Length: 161
Figure (tube, helix red, strand yellow):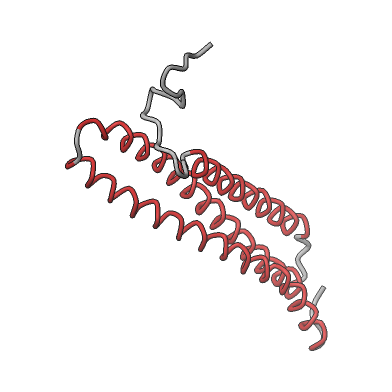
């Protein structure tokens, strides 16, 4: 379908606006991931410095927290990558939508496929975010000392069944 008037161009621009809002949302997710990843790196550096200077009895707890931070960093990295892929796919979707309308190509299947791929990638990024949050919450102990790796949560005198 060739564009014959200004109203046709306006219609194409209107169709591209929804994916642009999607891009803004994906950008917000990437920003959240980047901030969380920065905090993870900062905490890791602090713990690494403490590890070398602390008494040997505290090292297992620091090592356990560093391992947890490593898992969180990997999940944040995966989430960032998947969200960036989703954003790139949305950008391609917008470009192909304009190509279809300006040049009359019949590529609706490509546009639909790009949208589906973008949503799958975004879902993967959200799952990575959820997993990172689960790891963070699981490693959190408010008001209680953290268990040393290998000792579990058992109180003194309790035995595993």
